[in-house]
Image (cartoon, rainbow, N blue to C red; front, side):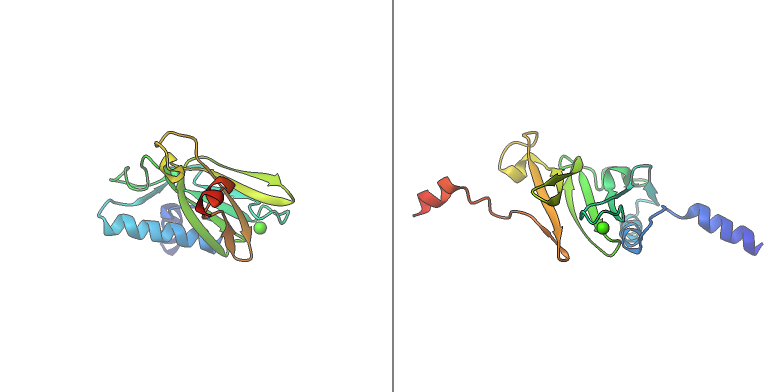
Amino acid sequence: MKHLALLLSLLAAPALAQSERAQMILDEAAETCESIEAGALEVRDGAIISADLDGDGMSDDEVVDFEYVSCEWNMAHWHGTGGSPIHFVIDGSWSKSWWGFKWETVDFAGERVILLARHGSRCDNFGASPCVQAFVAYDGEFQTVLDPGSAEEDVSEE
Ligand SMILES: [Ca+2]
């Protein structure tokens, strides 16, 4: 009987997160579903992808993509015109998330760069306009441009 209970609890486990951090993200999401009375957390294939996001040569990072995560009775939560929250988990230990659509890594200027397609309003334009943000995991943070500060802007300010 004990074994059956264990088996059932394993079957009911919401997802197969590999790291504690990714599991924490899903646990918090499950709590959110509960708190908005939207049933259980549903985690579909593709929700957790292993990747090398910081360029250390190991695929020990993870992307938790909420495009594939929802509450049983509220599909709209975490899904909107801006895409879904996408969590970038580095070395299983720390993470940060942004709303977005597709993501990809590229090697550029000696850095592993994460590219994330975002809602056009983030680029001060209409929603479907192309808008891409770049991130570099560095020293426990994600480096990204906060103020584009084009040369033309600088000149006009002087
Ligand atoms: Ca890593």
